[in-house]
Image (cartoon, rainbow, N blue to C red; front, side):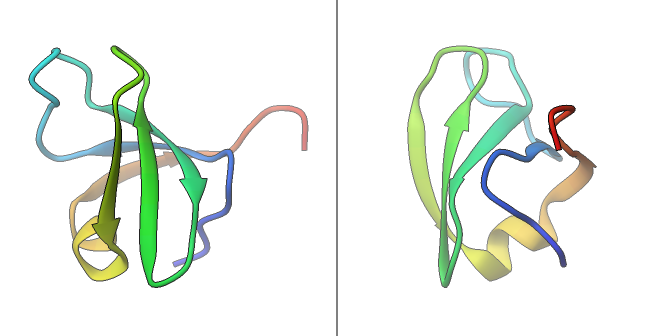
Length: 62
């Protein structure tokens, strides 16, 4: 999957705050994601992140 820092992804399950959109802050073996609803940050393995992605939005400035 072609995912880059700054991309907005929508995951299958919503965060407890109600938002299901996340911004990618770091890529590699693990992803650092920031919830766009409450700004909470998590690190999850790449395999788990790619499996749970529903939609990818590229930033408009690129």
